[in-house]
Image (cartoon, rainbow, N blue to C red; front, top):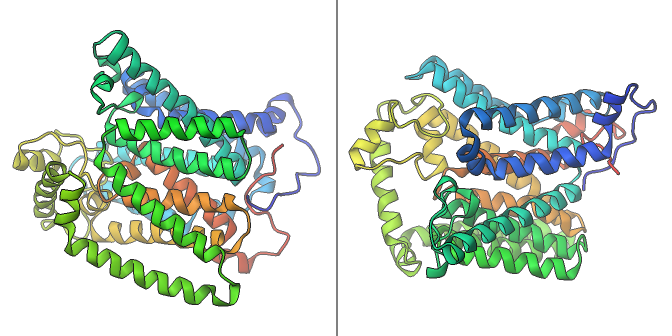
Amino acid sequence: MSTPLSLSPSAPRGPLRALLYSAEMARAFTLTTIGAVFALPAILRLLGQTGAISVVAGLCLIGGAMLLVRRDEISWPRLLPSTLLLFLCLALASSIWSTDRGRSILGWLALASIAFLAVAVAHVRDTLQTVRATGDVLRMLLGVSLALEILSGILLDMPISFLGIQGNIALGGPVQGIFGTRNLLGLATVIALITFVIEWRTSSVSTGTSIFSVVLAGSLAFLSASPTVYVVALGVGLATGVLTLVRHTAPARRSLVQGVLAGVVLVGGVTAYIFRHTIIGWLNAGSDFSTRAELWDALLTLVELRPVQGWGWFGAWDRNDLPFYLINSMVNDRHASALNAYLDVLLQIGWAGLLLFSLFCGVALVRGWLVASQRRSVIYAWTPLITVTLLIESMFESFTLVGAGWFMLVLCAVRAGQSRSWRNRFQDRDAPTGTVETR
């Protein structure tokens, strides 16, 4: 949890301002926002693009009004990380040389609006409250997903096409739930498992609720049959073990241990790359990886034409625009992303964008990791572990550039920056921390 603020000496005047200022409104906004971004695939199928835009725009208006009411309690220099601001500026500037300026601007608005929602949540709720809200939302969405899969695959024995549910649960999967794809469901289950365990360790919910939640998320992770789940789960498990070791190391030796572990991670990464084909075969993910390898080869061919500035920011691919239809033509498929967030950034805004994106992710991870290793409460482990999850997933999917993945990445970056930022040295010890104490 971030250091609580003292509330403004004078309460807001007027019923609307009082409502926007209230703890109940902050909680409702957080629950609704997290629910909306995770359920965005279902909202798009049910309401269409116009409906989804309306939902996000409405939440942005409410979030902006809440920040405005709390403006005296927010440290504006720490409103969002500098690396995030630079990345957003470059993405917007890329519309100048984009192959379709209008679609680039729309893609940037989607990127910026989800980022703004994450910033708003990070500044009206502390870490424990954010974890609790995320847990409540994911419990509900995973429960609904399982119920719909049972309805489709067992009770009705037919797909629910308008939600993208294929009804394969009786066959052992793969299942998608309301998340649209098995890989997105898999990512949601890993985030949920981390959140549920943190809830249990902090006694935020009852033991029975924790056990039910972990079983629910674990079952859907298995039924998703997503090969990326196993890779992400292994990476998060290793990160958890390392973080636990660091947290139990004496402060005087902590830097040495961190340096040694960083070297081990580097060697492990190189080894994993050398034996990548063996690992892929062990994970039984050969066909998935071969598809990705073919796509990445075609993508890199287009990158060579615009290596520095890229083709312009679009976010999710529009298959009718350059360079995406050329890539799909080369691989004879209909991909909606690069299936790799880093390569997607490289394609769209070049090496400059990839450098900024990597810096943004790296700073978020290091800040969150250092805070979690130095503070006693286990609640601080949530931010770096979610960040690790997203960064590993980014090697196989582009979820961290859109929707819930991007929201969680920005949320973790802002949360880590509130606790550890270079701007702290320029502020008085009693200056606002950027997180409002809510009841």
